[in-house]
Length: 168
Image (tube, rainbow, N blue to C red; front, side):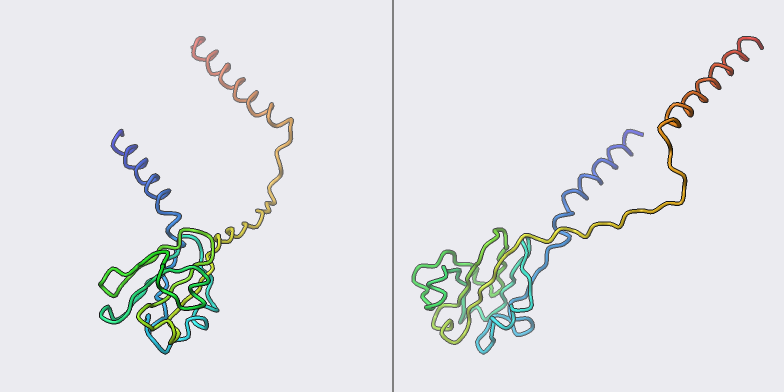
């Protein structure tokens, strides 16, 4: 009994930890083309909503390109001298967690930004889940009086049962 209770508690805890991650999305930047030149990332991102908890997955040629996060001014000017963050790990497969609600700007250095390798995303809070429709029931509603009648019936039954045991 105790082990089943522990198993149930662990399962509930695991579900509670996993729930926020169920709705997170992983976006491969550029889709099947990846993070490369000759892709319009403004068009690629235009039909997407990036939410808190989502991930950007940059796939690129690690020998030529990189992933730098910059501020808006440096994004607009393709200036990579002072990046906010360098997400380049050297494997050509870099993951950026979208963990702050704000605009974020990514570019590729080494001159590729001037060829269009830059991405601007706005991270939003996830929308609230849809509200469930109210359940309509044809069953009669319990009145205030029924809150007293039902317990009274059980109490009388318990007293009667005790009486019969004592007498019998």
